Amino acid sequence: MRPALAAGVPVGLALLGCGGLFGAPEIRLESARGGPCATVEAVVLTEPWKEDRALSVRIDGQATEPLRLPAGEVTATFERPALPGRHTLEVEGASIEVTVPPVDVAADWPGWERPPRQGDPAEILLRVTGACPLPELTLSAELPDDGRSLVRREPVSGPVVRLDASGLSQGAHRLVVTLRRGELVVDERTLALSIAEPCTGPTCKDRDNDGFVSKKFGGPDCDDFDAAVHPGAVAFPDPDGDGAVVRPDLDIDCDGEIEHFDGPVDCAEGDPTIPRPEDPDPTGVDEDCDGIVDEGTIAYDDDGDGFSEEKGDCRDDDRTVSPVAKEQPDCKDNDCDGQVDEGVTRPTDEDRYEPDDDRPFALAGATPLRNPFGGHRTTRDELALRIRDGKDVERFSVFAHDGALDDFHVRVELLSVGDGLIYEATITGPAGEITRRLDHNGDSVSIPTAAFKNETGVYEIRVAPVGEHPAQCPLQIAIDTG
Image (cartoon, rainbow, N blue to C red; front, side):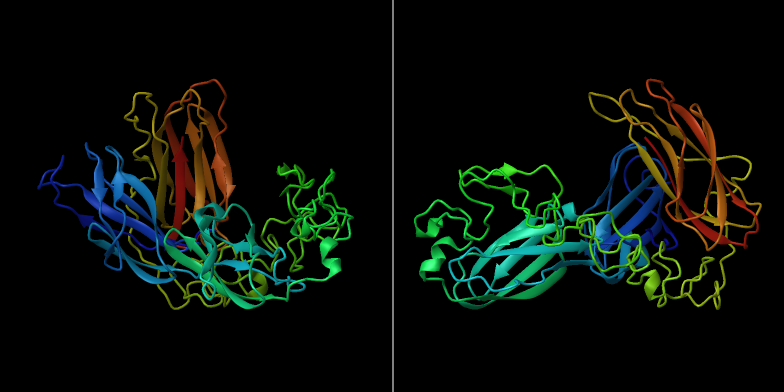
């Protein structure tokens, strides 16, 4: 879910280029918000230039990667890494304050049921959960007292990360597990490992009692801790018999080749009811083994603000609303006290797109790509609007290009809407017309398009309030084409 956007700040630039030193285009830092996983997300608006541009971006005075705008582009959405907390974002001198919320991500490990012995295989199964996109995370696991690493900056490929801690000596060990997004540390914790004395008696030769001596003692068994793994085995280990396995890539017959299991992955071997569809009521259990516990229930923090409905969040689709949030003039009950906009006054100024009630405000639209293969850029405009009253209609027009092989669409999405407010969004263009009522963050409408039919052209978008509507309510929407 998306937090509300901060108000934009314009800045005029005196840059050499198509605008010269006089009449340089205005650049406006339209909006900014803290992202769900240690990022700042922002929208920049400007006038079109004939040349590609690189705009300076700073966070708390420190330079970050420049924002590159292709020629003709008038809007760009970008994100940069930032630790949780309050920051000042600057784009070419225009600044805006933005708060990055705490990162909801963790690499958890319940511990071993019993400590492995020295010389035995020792596997650690980490469960990575939270709001961060797993493909954007890397994981390191260091044993500082032993001077060795289990992994260093390895990409997180799924919710379960397997670490091989074999070879540790008898005694206690510290394992420091670090999750990073880019160069930012988003989670770090220290795990206590305990390794028992080595097994030396005659029973150690066949620990799993499968009739095969361990390779450690000169036998052929490549996993003497799983009776289902041995020479000649044909089935993956599935102790609870539910048809799902914990280890989908395994040399089950000890022939030196890894076999792959094509069925479901189990996250709770020993419970034959898991995996199963997630329970609609909170259970504290990850029933569907997707790495997320209680998603879709009142116990899950949908918007990542640290509060679920169970913990008092009166609007769990909006990061700006929680029991500890500060009231803002945005037609929402930000602090969940049952009152909307108490103690604050909503601004009375118009948004930058007025007047657009009777004639549409023209967005930049699709522009040709500069490459030998042709084509056009997809577009996404994130717009911060202010609705005067129940009669204020917002109109926009945008040129959309329907390529020969692309998945063409024209879509309107609500990013941030006041409590209980309803809007009617209409898209009209070469592909026809569609109207839909939208009333929640994330609601959207897309115009149906036909395959093998070119529906390139100018589309008009109309957004109008439905029913009673308070004065001067902000509304954030996105219009994207492609």
